[in-house]
Length: 118
Image 1 (tube, rainbow, N blue to C red):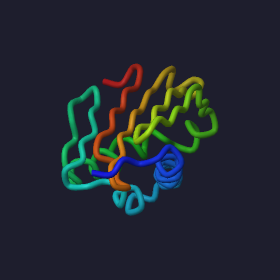
Image 2: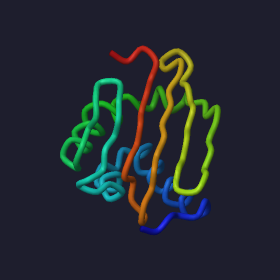
Image 3: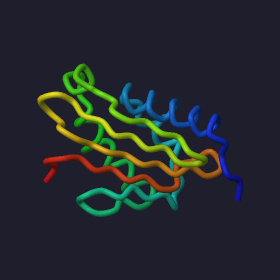
């Protein structure tokens, strides 16, 4: 099992983030495997179908044009094959956090937490 270098992890993540922000669901899904898992406050989304539903129904609508205009990246760290984000969007999202674990160019684990999400 190969471990990504910080540079390649950063490049993979940048591509992923660009696809998320542009609402390119097909591009987003290229970053996940059938074995991938996203952990959320609502429980895990495991497998490509569940992850695609999560992005289509929750994450992409959450990242509306209004939210992205107020997006504030507070912290962004890349260490080895891991990426951590801590962010907010004034008036809509007081605090959110994402962690990504990459292996062999794909996201195998991700956690997503957002304040006031029920």
